[in-house]
Length: 128
Image (cartoon, rainbow, N blue to C red; front, side, top):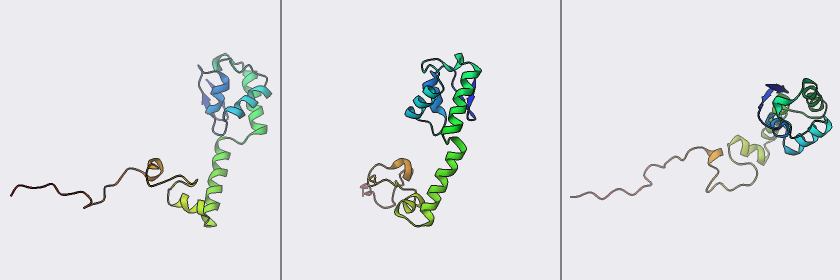
């Protein structure tokens, strides 16, 4: 199993898609990395040589911020927004969507499970 930037990438996938398992590397960045490292994009991870893996790792290290460093930067950015009391920071603090999405319906991922409000349902009719 190949490890790139501290992440074990899957053996059976093509290297172009396997590299995207590293946090901070998307489709475009993966394509650029594979091109700069001069590796065939369709080769499977298990078929890579150690030299090819090290070339990919070198390209990532010198050109991209990934994994822990990137997590730290994103967290610091969100913390800064909260400290300066910006609108986006306020939305982050309240665990609500920060990019203008509606919240009357949907937004369940951010807001959590529905909570029934007591007394809002009609009482069932009883026999007398």
